[in-house]
Image 1 (cartoon, rainbow, N blue to C red):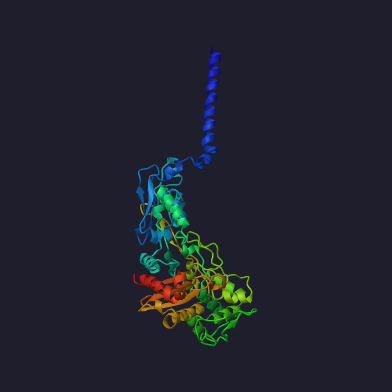
Image 2: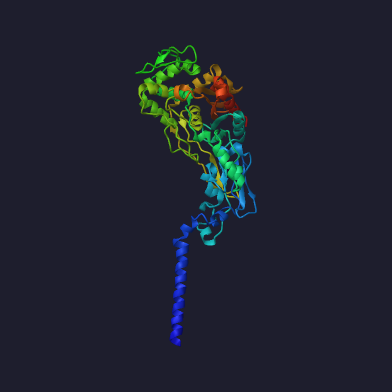
Length: 485
């Protein structure tokens, strides 16, 4: 009898060991498989069991959370959703996250280990941290001025602070309301399908994720290259430029919209936006120095994050001399995001230094204690300080005497450059109206804001598209908002 009891006990012990081994196998070895199984809703339920942290603009929360009382309990809400969508992106229970909601998801959701009171505290206790907050660099009045200035037109605005690289405005239109995507209802599904099927692409962030031919605004870069290389030494000396200009090695004759470009000085050519002068200057500088200057401004850089990624602005370094002439006036393969062109204007305003743009000022815990700050960022030299000073003079001339008069602000020093970019086969595409600028208030020691505006025209208003007419007034409104604080 005793022997049978011992056998039964051994068998029970064996079953217990098998149970423990199987539990360990399920919880350790197979845990990732179960976690990734679409049928497992526990991670989603845990993720939405508490309110998400918020994104702040000017000290005010532009996001929130709504208690739905359902399994996925808290749903994201947005204040002025279309205004801030190019910054916040969306946080959707069905479609994931984008932009700041994505890059700062760990902090906002509370999953970031930096939010724990002590190292490994949550692993031991099983506690969940409240979501932290993201404080942005956005200037509320400038953001609103850019959005209202664009109105119902397709386009984008980027504004930065030249001395720091802080992004003050980031607008893309047409926009959308990210709150309509927050839940997992049939309405969210219909909204997703509608937005993705819209030919105007309202979810495309044109300020950082679309590149355009920059047209004559790129002449700022070409002028910097010509001055740094010593191709031009005197702003008022004739440039020996013909009108029309035959592109090297071709029979293609480049012309100008303005009169008086033959042998115009750099100052006159900049104010009148003479294509012939700047195409010839680019050819005279050469592809190596033109590409080096463009890259110093930030072109051909595919690593820029603000913290979400920014599309690569391009200057083609594998071109012949004719293609180089076109590239030097912002055509051919030259492409730029509005944020890149705002950085170009900021480099001029900032004495030739490029400060990498950034959007997050600091992150903090729910109680307000600091998690991380942007800190100081290294700058790089895009051009000599003396070249930047001369370009500031040229850009002031565009506003005071040239095509950028619509950007003038009483009592402030404003510099700018207009551009109307052609594109498509035989320039058949609807042109883009550009304006890049910077502004300094009468009591300021240095420029406070640099702006880039691009407006996509339509076939109906093709003949009325111009950087000075469409884009400059929008830039003026953004600059006034920053200077008026």
